[in-house]
Image (cartoon, rainbow, N blue to C red):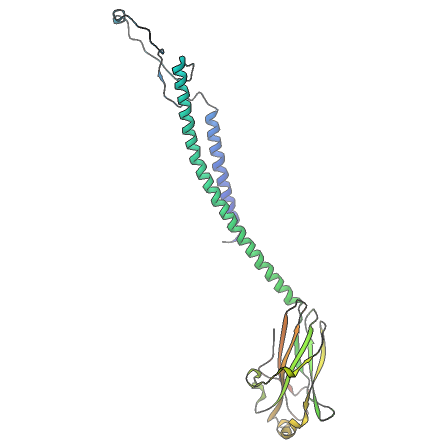
Length: 289
């Protein structure tokens, strides 16, 4: 049920309850304001104790018509007063039963309305909580740090090592903290684009390095080093693009909201110059959360 339909239903229910209450109250007050409309049986107008009459005299008398009157209009004696009290008590009991019945119905309607209101309140609270979670998640996605990594070729270094730089870029609106890089190298024959780190990788905890923090909309070059002796037997195939140096790993960090994030990477380097133009992404391992 849409929000507008629920509101219309609650307004209709409240109006119906008010209408029933107003009609019942008006009916009862109207009855109290017209005491002349008696609601009990009239009876013949006779004395409490009729005086004895002479039968002979009454034989010649003409018939007398008795009028009807209510017992509470100018009662004659104690008996009529008692009868009036009994009638009033009976009428009060009847009215009480009548309004008790209406009271039960009105109370039932009120309880149903209360339950509906409670249910709608709980539903509205749940929807508000969901909306708040969605708004918070959207805000976090707009403001959080997003780190991507791009390959930058292979360079010669001293002491028989090859330097493999990576361009680490924070594309988000807030800083990234506690950057931790875990990476490794492999010489892969054939097509390196199909290298899957989940199947062929061998990362261990000893491969981790800490790289500090990275501000919003900024970048930093991170260097990893490869022993040139590992590549020595494969230089011919690497230059002819029959084999490649594969650099893969994971960069973890925390955003300003305290969530731990992770960016996976997998690059291959081959060709005559091993330049950044010849460095490409593998099909697998390039994802960020």
